[in-house]
Image (tube, rainbow, N blue to C red):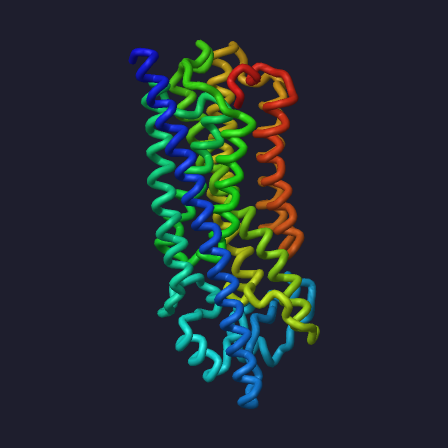
Length: 367
């Protein structure tokens, strides 16, 4: 493809990325508005129920979930609420009032309820629109470069942000994860801004070592795994907040985080995060394996203790430790959440600090 056309497609790509970032910003505001509006509506419902002489229910940790939150559960509440870790069910009048106002309480199974949260629907629609525009930016970048669009940090961040948001939207088909919208879309905006401000790279060809089909295999799996780790990072962060809130409320303290009633219980978040981390860990294992095979093809050795290789292995060890500790050593609750967060921080460190400040065989690629 002539250079002029390459440059034009690159300019179109940058324009699409800018439009996508703007659309995501509006979606982020809509998600935040939904949380604020729903929280206000729930407080009004609580006040009305209190005036009617009923105690409004709030999510509380019961049974085994209390140990995860660091508190003690009431045995009577455990018998009433069913399986351990489920959110406390609202009283009949509270549930009726919540349905009338279009606000759904958090569901442990994260299923959609018959509710009318207009801001949330607008936010999802805007996120879909932003993802379509973002996808056009990724495709035009690929056409301009004449290859897959993840050959440097700019391309990895823009493609990674697209995959993270696409995975989030696909997950919304089966589960009501709209409470993650502000986190996931916010991270996507940060990645796009960082790519444009700090890592912008003009459209160009790859060095010979990267001109291999292993680039497609190795990096595509790494991007998908990182997108899944992004979701679990958001869930783990919310789990810590929810666990602290549940402990405070169970001790009789004031509920100062009313919007968290739209978020499932800490145990529900932990269970889903664990399952997604298990899938992402398998992907990261293949990332490590295929990277070693590619290294042998390009440099004549499977492992050379390059900084990038070492930190890829560190990430694998952290998540392996997380899965093992939770499955066999009883590391549940906040300890599991913190370990998941540490793993994601290692991912961020690997793709930012290591790429920018450590010299190695991967330095020329920006990856």
